[in-house]
Structure formats: C-alpha cells, structure tokens
Image 1 (cartoon, rainbow, N blue to C red):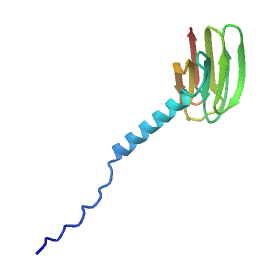
Image 2: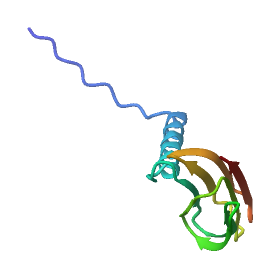
Image 3: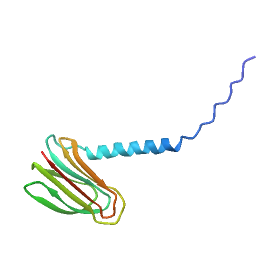
Image 4: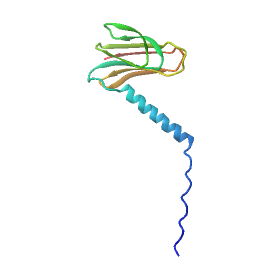
Length: 125
C-alpha cells in the first residue's frame, strides 16, 4: 500500500526586519538611480530632489542662479567651482536631496529632513 503524502507545511510570515530591510534596500537603489540619471559624459550637474517647494542658489564661479522651485530639477553647469545652496521652503520633515554629479558619478551629496532645512554643497574640479 502506498504512503499517503503529508500536506504541505503552512507558509510562515516573513519577519518584520526582513520586510523593512528589503524596503530600505529598494529605496536606496531607487535613490541611486535618481541621482545617477543619464547626462552626457563630462557634464557637471546639480540635481535637487524634493516633493515640496524649495529656494536656493545653484551655479559656478561665473554666475549663480537664484531659484524658487518645486520638485526635482537638474541644472547643467560649465564652471570649475560648483555651488549648490538649497533650503526647504516649508515646515515639512520630508527629505530634500541635493547632489553634484560629474560624468554620471555623484561627487557630492547632502540631504535634510529638518523643517526649513538647508543643504550646502560645493565642489572644485
């Protein structure tokens, strides 16, 4: 007489730390993709990522652009001394990211979650 197969074992739930860890890795990868998006080789870029309104100045030794923007923006620059001074224009604790990118690589990056927080970056090439 053939043995009766046992029923499959019940599926166990994934531990919370595994779910949170996986989500953190996914967010990190997404952020890396956003900060290393396609630009032309040799270009210098300042990229700002924030869901709300922000103010700031972005530029190089030739000129600074005074900005009042919302959301993600990128600015291509030609100079040797790149400056990005960006401040949240609201009391949100959402994260503001600013990066200086050269030749598809992030060379300087900063962030803040402080209400009305500021990120100041500069980089000399």
